Length: 366
Image (cartoon, rainbow, N blue to C red; front, top):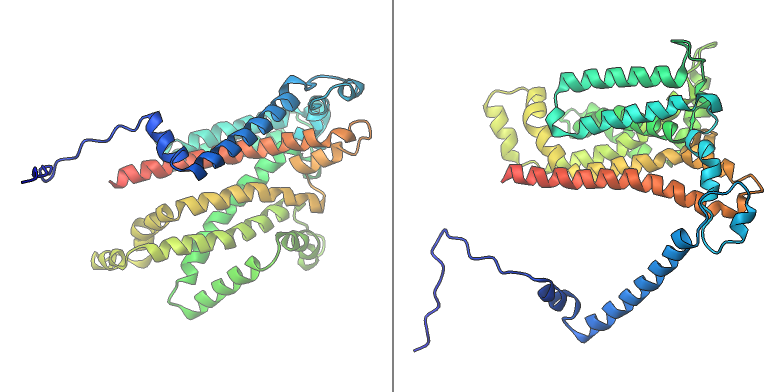
């Protein structure tokens, strides 16, 4: 008689199998001859590309040089173009003697954003006060006119500070509109639902460049004579509306994924529509749609680069203007790689934060 298999007692966890590095390599890399050959090809290709990038970007590169001739004699990248033109890239048309103001504004913004993203500081009144002070300080620093600071028109704002201002304005103005559009599209009122569907589907089907063109050139035609709206504000509102329409569909998906029993339980407790939505339904919907929501927020950061079409000097357009210098034009790759790294750092940081928050939410759920 064969030995009987001993089963673990009910309710007791089985011991976890130790997965060593050798086991992982055998199971994932060398599990078959095809996987072995594919792994070797990938490793050789990665080693070749890595060696090339290491030599080009670091070992043979020129980091500081006031004369492009030093770069012509080198075999690697010419990061000196970033060193020589970094002020224009990071500050655009902002007056040279006032560059400390957007620098301080970006630092204040990053500190406030870091505090806001930390759960220990999630207090509505405290965060509202923090951002009220931060926005006021950034406005005074960027525009001036107070405390002896010379005024700088928004048409002269540029670089990284302008990118951060438009990105924040897009998310702050667009997200509440997205929530309202998502709720309106699921409304039982035919008129409200029809209006929301029309807005979402119309603006989702229009390129962002068209919306920016309308905001800059067409909207002023409908304003009363003698009145005007700042160009930067019009552009930010246009991007925010575009962002809201895409984000609304993501939130609507989260609302549809909330079990019907949650609605029925809230109604059984006597909660009204807005109270039920605010306390019971919307938090669950946002939690379900959280990864997709962050994806659209990262896309909003990159969408700010479209303002180069209408003449605003964000960090990408400022770099493009720098590359018009015939002395440094040859090294445009290095300049655009630097700008790409800036976008990557912010986007990757948001992605890591979203992953950490998603893990924390799953732990809280269990």
